[in-house]
Length: 93
Image (cartoon, rainbow, N blue to C red; front, side, top):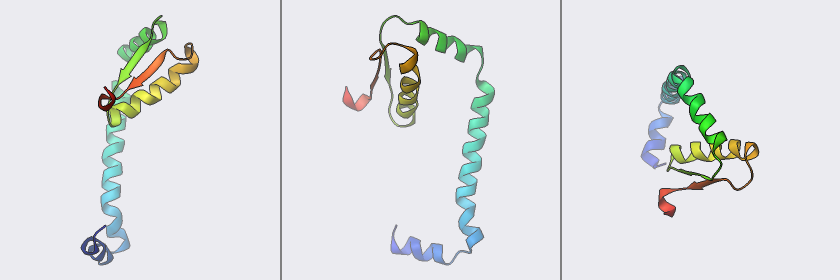
C-alpha cells in the first residue's frame, strides 16, 4: 500500500473504513444467492453425467473458474477411481 493510500485511510473514521469491504461482501453475497436460486435440474444432470463417465474427466479453467474446477475434482475424486479427474489450466497448455 502506498504512503498516500495509507494516509488517506488514516483520515477515515473506523466506520468509514468498513464501508468498502461491507459493500463488497454484500455484492458477493447477492451473487451467491442468485447462484443458489439458479441451481436446479440442469446442475443435477451435469453431476450425473460426470459421475457416470467411464473415462477421464479433464477440467480446464483459470482464476475463479479454475479454483471451482479444482474443488469439483477434489469432490469427485472419492466418488470415482483415483486418477480419473485431472485439472489443466490454460497457462499449462
